Image (cartoon, rainbow, N blue to C red):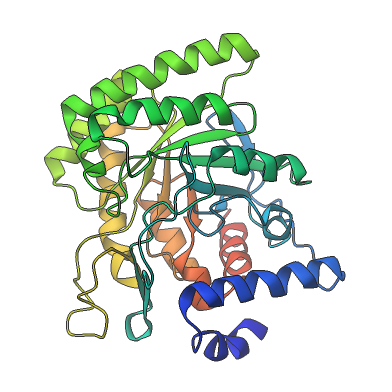
Length: 338
């Protein structure tokens, strides 16, 4: 309720400024003991060999560098995903690079994997008290040629392996040049082979098996979705996350900022992401679990993703528009449905 009162003020600020102000406010509230701790163990699920206290997670992107894990944990998430991080720090694309479209409950971003690098992320995790399920989302540096992208993923995988509950391979951001080429059959087959080989060696080295998830785009043809699903099963991947942001502008045509370059998230993505989940579920037939993300703006949206075949869901833009209470609203709906 408080967030709904504050949102008009926050929306008067540039998006990245509002992001910093919001996190500073909730960090200070937590330190002063004013932030209620809302851990919620409701409908626990075992997915990827991990025990999730509830199926509602935070999507990658909100806390790229793992700076706010303790505060986010107090909001009731069943799991948190940080990143996308890259081997070397990089500033991302020039500002402004985030654009709100409030008439459509949407956001366009072209951040471009801005992050402080994998070593800084690890340092932040080591300073945190968070002991819940942590996903670490990894990508390639902008300066790395696409034919060398596998090298960047392997560097990050090796470094974060001991600190992650699972690792997400981001091959679907529209804001890093040529990245989505890695979803093509030949490139993806090569990448998955290298990742699974590295996972096997890291498991032996550390005595722990850490699941690997692949995050895919919503802008795929049905034949591409099926081809990806076949490769995921061939390489025995542990999970698929559907979906990232979209290049489509359906639902925001003629609205201010709709022509800005970048990925669109929020309500206009809801049904597009759900269609991808439904097709993946039909092709995978339960062989690989699905995490549903994309346009979850309400409890009903989350439940629709689960009905389409998602075992877990993640939110991001929905929290920007509706605040932390959205986590509890979804959790309550899940509890009622069990």
